[in-house]
Length: 112
Image 1 (cartoon, rainbow, N blue to C red):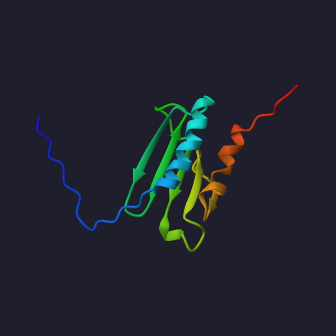
Image 2: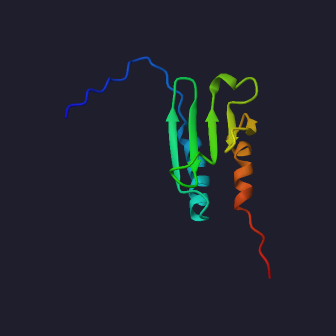
Image 3: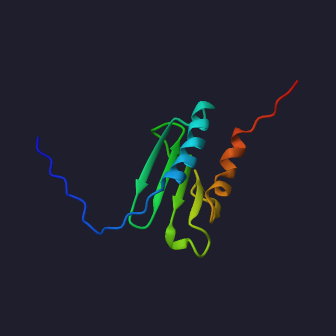
């Protein structure tokens, strides 16, 4: 009946996607949903990384995960695209090029 939830501690740093990043991610997510490829998503914000996962069905493993780790910003790039098997598909400093493999799934040939 009564659930006690801890209040967030001031000064606790949390890694998040900013508005432009989230807009870009949700734009691609919306197009994948309208194409019938994805149905659900989850967002997780942690101390040292932010994670966006997209699912074909809500009961499965995520088909794709986008990870933002600011600690890797000066090394390999803070964004990583991880596939369903857990392999890193693409890593980089900018979001759009990292999401390019997903955009390719949306391209279709137009015939006569």
